[in-house]
Amino acid sequence: MKWGLGDAHSDPAEVLLRLVSQSAARVEFYGRLLNEAYDAAERLKKAHEAGDLLVDKTVDEDGAPASLVQARDDLDRIFHTGGVAALIGRVYSDNGDGSIYATGEQIRGLAELEARERDRCANFATKAVAAGLAERQVRLAERQGAMILQVLTAVFDELGLSDAQLEVAPDVIRRQLDQLQLAG
Image (cartoon, rainbow, N blue to C red; front, side):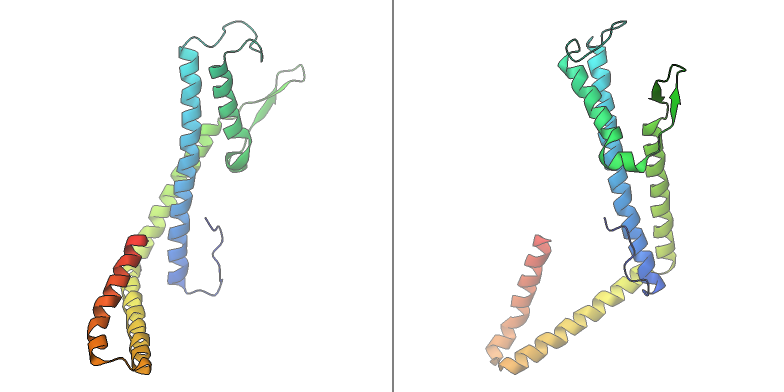
């Protein structure tokens, strides 16, 4: 979730790849926050439907059922602390007697933010495809493979491996690479 672009002197294709990766990470992050808010709102709804909400009575710490208090606390925590609070703006009003209350629709703001980032990510990905970045990544991987082969060949030559050792070396390397892929 690195929010910057790193080295400002990168070539345009690398910047585009970074933007696609960054935007995809943000889409996942915003989606996770939206899901947390949705789940908290659903818990509050279920507590209300279960009859835990005391209608026409003041609900205080002593009188409110635990499930309702927990659901309200979860929703309040999600909207007023941590990441979501930094990502969404709130609109406040007063009721004339000096009491201030929030009037903003935070969940819609977060949903809109997530939708915009999804669109941005798709736009970057479209540009990346148009720029032929997938082909460029393949060429880069091929070039890296050739460089690794050069290094291994030089190491084998310097170690003075026997013909038998050189014969089994490709199988050993392939096994090690397969284990790396399984671990990753």
